Image (cartoon, rainbow, N blue to C red; front, side):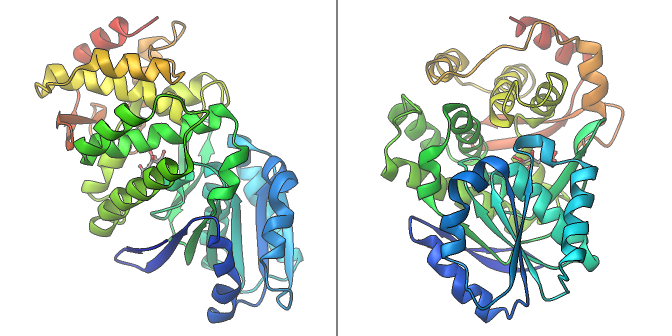
Length: 356
Ligand SMILES: O=C(O)C(=O)C[C@@H](O)[C@H](O)[C@H](O)COP(=O)(O)O
């Protein structure tokens, strides 16, 4: 299946399905790339690099650079090592980086492509469910110790090749992480999609291929619709951050890996639903939603050892925040997000109620 993502700076195809890697050879030839640098992580590389290589045109020189798995890849030192590898292997301005992995590899490799010689091409070859969100839309970044994704650029890929075969080896924690972003897409834009997810998906370990393909496609459609209107987050695009204001804080302050990105976003979405009830008058059965999330294995409360004051200071540094109040994405209705600068008291009271 092929979809086109249209943004102000560029349009590009997203291929989804077990044969999507077949497109790689044509893309390399059409774009006249001179060299390829595959950036992958140690887990994906050991499981799937041979499959990727089998689909790469043999006549174009290629090199591979392997980075640590997960958020450890999104550090300045790793970024610099990727640049060094590219320079040492003679990548030029017509070379292309292939981001082969999950969200962290995509974010890092995309930022390397954005910065190398002031910007070269890259292709996303995602291997996780999460990447239906992160591989589309051109947000690339690495982390700073004071906040997630604080160093980055908007840089759109030349293509996204989503091979659903790779999803078969995903651990359940990774599935939970990626599925939460599909739930987010439903919350911000499509009540019927949310209904579908809550009715049809009762176990993430055994999710059927056709259902997964539909969920990825619908999630990407929603995301593409938003970034086509607002590529650089001057307004509307902030709605894609639903659940992320608290989610990013939980993910970073618990130490990367304890909560996978989407697991932290799930707690952030539940928090934002409770805030919405009070601020916008959202009418939604949060209890039923929380029950469903628990059934799928998500933690649904704020970890007990997180202190509100510390969390509040980190939320003030969030990229959405533009005043002295943290900026949240809330819902007026399911599918109707609204951006609100939040009062500290409401944030604190709701935070206390949602602690374990
Ligand atoms: O693409 C976007 O725009 C998003 O906000 C998607 C998020 O789900 C993304 O994964 C991410 O965490 C971006 O957050 P940001 O605070 O770094 O912009």
